[in-house]
Length: 401
Image (cartoon, rainbow, N blue to C red; front, side, top):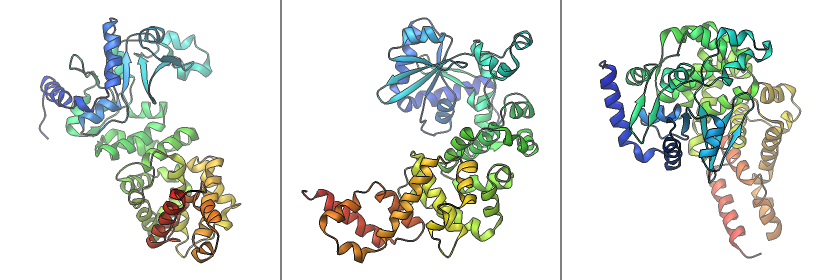
């Protein structure tokens, strides 16, 4: 791809963003307008800007400003401050929450020296700065872009537009230092490169390989969120192979590493995962997504079929769910309930002999729809049987009681 100077890149991408104005949330623009009318700087920042520039529809629009949290709260209606160490403002518009953050800066050596040891890794979150300082605190160059859709202004202090143009994922600062600072960035780098179809910059990729052991320092809740995001990727199969090839599974999900080390099991698992989009899986529902992942895992590990009763108290499987994937205990219970509910759905003849009241009770059970999807992914139900049960649900729920 041909190189352009900074001014040409700004002009090119400013034009692109102006043409994408219909994809920018109107509530976010109104919040920006309110802050700007009050004399503050205010920009869209991060993933929302990045996604617009690479022709993806953003899910969220985060806002950055030089207004302090209390000032934002006074100026923006229906907003409230959250966080103790890292104070943010959330503005509620309908069911949606807009995150508004004040520009941050790195802490000075003097400030670090006067901070308690336990709080040092959080100290810079407490110091407000300017837009340039805030830019260099972000993780990747493509996430450091600020855009003002009212005055049509792009701010790019980290050459993020260059990397958007060359489709390169590059760390801000030294990759080794930034990955040790927060090893979850290893997962984010792999996921973003797959989501955007970007190439991971050579030095960053080398440090990902060198520092994979650092992943063991990450906390399970953050890893859980990353796993969910991986399985929501369009090219999830390729992304999972990348995690395996870079030995991330070996570090964090040993059971997946074993599965992927077996060619046949890996092929079966990736094939099942690839079917999710055709089965109407609700990717925004963590419970349903994890249930489908667990069913696919058990199916791939047991190609001749499996009895879910054998896993209800299987310590290896339960530890895999809890400690490797981060599936909550309640979510595992829902998975087992839905899998057990599959039994009655495979015995249609018995169902047809029941009275209408008992039939209605079965199709309105809370496990019914999840069990249908699990039945398809485990091949315990055929598509013809799915159609039968959907017709039964329609017949019994539309009929007067």
